[in-house]
Amino acid sequence: MLKKMMSNPMMMFVLFAMLIMLLSACSGTNNKPADPVAQPAEVETNTTPVQEEEENKEEAVPVPDLDGRVIRISHWWDATPKGDSESDELARERIQMVEEKYNVKIKYLNTEYWSTSEKLSSSVLANEPFAEIVRVPDGFIWGLMQGGFLTPLDDYLQDTRVEQDVVNAMRFGGDKVYGLESWYTPNDSGMFYNKRIFKEAGLKDPQQLMDEDNWSWDTMLDAAKQLTVDRNGDGKMDQYGLAGAHYVLSEMLVASNGGKLYDEQTGTVTFNSPESMEALNFLHGLYNEHKVVKANGGNDWEDPAKFFGEGTIAMYPGGLWEIEGRILDKMKDEWGYVYMPKGPQAESYYEPFGQATAYVVPKGVKDADVIVKIWEELQDFDNWQDNRRLSLENILPDEASIANAMNDNGQVQRLFGGRFGGLGIKDQLDKVTEKFIKGEITPSTGVAQVIGPAQAAVKKVLSGEQSKKE
Image (tube, rainbow, N blue to C red; front, side, top):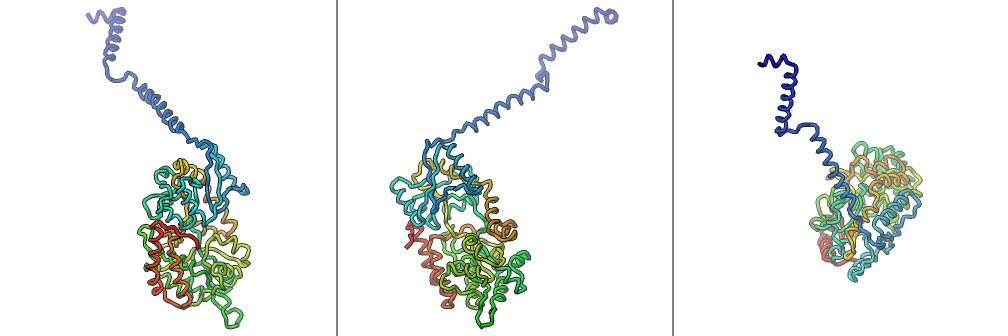
């Protein structure tokens, strides 16, 4: 029968058609997709609207409209950008952007330094903060924190461009963040040196010693002793290895040995620690045993820089802020800038960090969360390092000094957690150093006398009593 059907073309066509229908029916009961390529394409098409919807949601987050409100930012100088530099022009652009974005007007206040803290506290007590953002002078933040005059800022810094170590530094040893700071430069103070004096003596200068990883207290002292000389033969030293104010030298030497004058976390005065005492004994020796520090002529604040400009000292520990007013137009010799030398206990070059200065938001300021965002958007996070380098290029004499100030090699570290500004600690220590540089007392005896009063001064400030200028 099948043979007959196979020999008949018509019958063959009928059989073939029946087979196709059967296969089609079977495929209709299959659970697998008929076209395996079609499903991924459909999934991809379905996810795109979801992604676009989420992106639109982010874009749709409303920007707060502060209805033309004036945002007052207080400094103890006029911080209004003048537009006479590229950085000022960029600052003006940021101000305009912020004003348009939040519908505000930015106004800079110039508040007298010593009046800032009192003005802040009295205006908060009157429920009328005099500014939305206030730059608080060194040390005053302790009393304002303890007195309850400031807004805690932790909740407003969850999504911030400020580095976490800077945010944590704004806790000032407490649990809450009360300050705002955009960044910290890693090196604001160090050692200025006279290249001519080193060259004429045939000595390696501090930069060469640093390049050899041999810039330490010992090598500094060795150079200072060789460079303290009687040049005109009258029996009196007329060139010295070092000059400085005892209250500046004590702070810088303690830090260069890895020591601190105060521990913010424990609220403890620590200028009696082994690292600190080693530094204070070294300072005592510079004046009394080695006699390599030129005595000031009655003005501890101005004389050391004056001596350096005159070319009568080889090395001068100081801050970068001094260059424009004290060194740049007064120094005739070639000079350079390096880190402070390493002390025996130091694992790195260290930068002291003693000032307690910050921006704050007074308690009672409305829309504090928006105010913090406004402050942040006024900062030049993208260009601050370039701006700093440009400013240093205008005041420092050579590429090596600029690289040191910029910490290009990453060798200098800030000593966070030891700010003592405004706590009365340094006042007590300075009483000691003023005596022992004259040989009237030893560091150990003097420190034992003032460690208690220094701790009492800290307790007074942290209890909420705000010190004022006499």
